[in-house]
Amino acid sequence: MNAPYVPPGSGWPGDPATPDTPVAHDAGDVRRLAADAPSLGELVARQSVCRACPRLVEWREKVAVERRRAFADQEYWGRPVPSWGAPDPRVLIVGLAPAAHGGNRTGRIFTGDRSGEWLFASLHRVGLAAAPTSTHAADGQRLLGTRVVAPVRCAPPANKPTPSERATCAPWLVRELEYISGSIRSIVVLGGYGWQALWPALKEAGYVMPTPRAKFGHGAEVELKAPDGGAALLIGCYHPSQQNTFTGRVTEPMLDTVFTRARTYADLPEPDAL
Image (tube, rainbow, N blue to C red; front, side):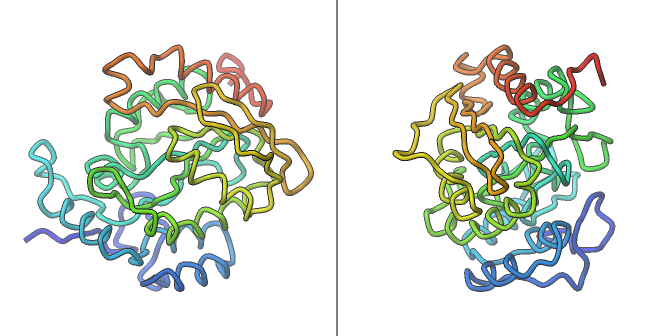
């Protein structure tokens, strides 16, 4: 029988954890381990070994053992998928949750699935990623002045985490925002779920939020006051899911327009200047 997950510190490319990384087993552990993480690197490591949500742990490990036929010969990550990218990003991208056979397989968010194909192609075209594809954790891809996070770190059944699971995972996101808020100038949120999950996290991390809460929409913009007193632009973007891309609800120009706006507001170089 295949192992249900990659042991921390066993040599998987980009694994932030070690066998000594503390493991959260419930919501209280998540709050404590997030709050006292002494660095961004240690926070990410702790995210990657969390076992606080029994339903999500069971599902992600079940998928990692049973596997999709197309990936039957591959080892699956099978752990929470940590955030990834620049440690001092000017652009932050907020997704939903890892895909069962994408990030849950590769160990890197938006890597190895159709949504990632669309996302990274666009990021490369506008100058926020070094390459147009993201296929596995050792492919050499780099995000340029950009970081990707997800409000829920484990692949959920039917792509739908419960409100309780989202609440349990939230302290990881809040603490990460506290670490990186000083550099962030643009935040792109992919989909309405991410929009809903991000607002309370931003408020808890010290951002000044307008009231009432702005509605999600593709291209919707909200200017926030960051904890350091600077401005940050929140931008809504339809999620590049297969359903949206197949039906034409999301097109390449639509994604490029949003990410160009984010790059420009964040004062990052244009592609031909890299």
